[in-house]
Amino acid sequence: MTKLELRKKYKALRDDLSIDTIDALSIDIANQALKLNIWSHSFYHIFLSITELKEINTDYLLNILSGKDKNIIIPRSNFKTGHMNHVLLTDNTTIKKNTYHIPEPIDGIEINSTQIEVVFIPLLAFDQAGNRVGYGKGFYDTFLETCKPNTLKIGLSLFNAEPVISDVYTKDIPLDFCITPKQVYTF
Image (cartoon, helix red, strand yellow):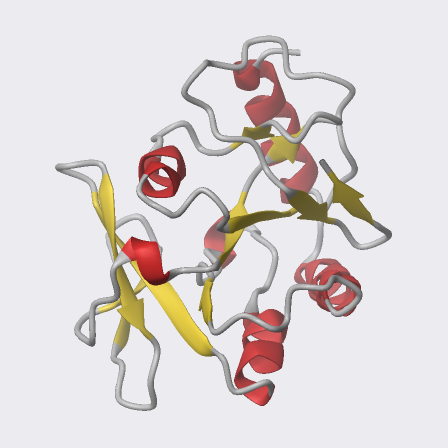
């Protein structure tokens, strides 16, 4: 299937899920994440969920990161430039939803993308080769290009892998892992 077809399919599948179901699946994803050998790093980048789009609830992963005393980095998107800034999440960080309902830091300590060691990536779908489909704005591809080559790229998905995404671009950056409620895919 093409990215466009997959976006349509997985948006519809997510729309059919209840908030309680998303919460239960999100807990399962957090528990699966604990099985990965990724917890020796210091700087973890994670998105804050857009509840209106029924994204995975990242609060459970945030609690794990906080409990392990990790540096948690959250993004702030600039829709004019197509880039993201990366802000250290602290007790003093003010979060506010932007016009696209994305919870973002208003202020805070900016972190250079080269410091980030693990990135949890939102997505709509992914395939068995680690290719992913997001919302199509390219924010994460642009961001991941600026990270160190050994930065771990981990997708979070409520659903299992598709066999193949037929229109992968040469600039698309594949995942190293994708965590679903029932399993972790390694690429």
